[in-house]
Length: 265
Image 1 (spheres, rainbow, N blue to C red):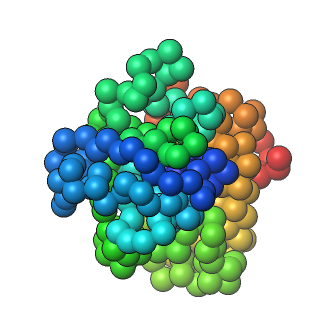
Image 2: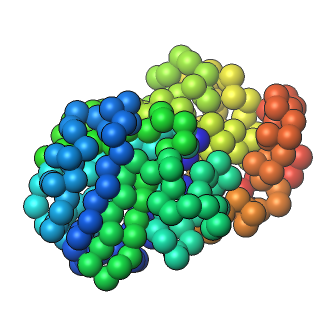
C-alpha cells in the first residue's frame, strides 16, 4: 500500500513538472467505485481549461489546487499511483504501469493532458482508491479527520511522550491510526519499531521516556530517508527490515529487537 513516502514522491513530481500548466484534455474513468460523487463527464468539464497551481499532501492523500475550485483529490488506497509520461515518479513495486505498457493504462482512473503536451495519470489496479472532486478537500473526510502529518507536522518529543503515556493500546496499532499520526502504514510502522527495538504489541503507556525518544527519532529518520530517495526501495539502507519483511512474513521481529544499531544512515 502506498504510504507517506510514495504519495510525497508523487506530489513532488507534480510540483516539479506540472505547475502553471493548463489542462487541455481530461479523461475520467466511468468507475463509480473509485470516482466518488460525480459523473465522469462533470468531472472532465470541471477540469478543462484550469491551471494547476500547486500540489498538496496530508498523510496518504494528495490533492491538486487549481486556479479555481473544485479540486481533484486522491486517496491512494491499496495500489493507487501517479504517473507522468516520460517522468520517473517512484519505484513503487505494485505499480500497474510499466514503461512498455499501453498509455494511458487500462487502469487509469484520472488522465489529463496539459497545454505543453505533458500527460498525467492516476491509476488504480485494485479499485480501493478514491478520486473526488471537492471545493475544499481539507474540510471533509478523509482529510479533515487526519491527525498531524508525520513529515510536515511532527509532534515534539515531549508531545509524543506525553500522548503515548495516555494510550492503553499496542504501539503498532496506534501508529497505524491515521487520526493519531497520518501517513504511517504497515511497512513504516514495522520499520520504525524494528529500528527502535520496540515490540509492535507493547502497550504505549508502558514505554519508557527513552523508548519514546528513540521511536520519535526513528519515525523522523525513516520517513525522511524514504522521502529523500523518492520512495525507491532499492535505495533504502541495507539494515532496513523492509528488504526482508515480505520474504519472511511474521519474522520481522525477534523479541522486538533489531540486530544492528538503530537509526544510523
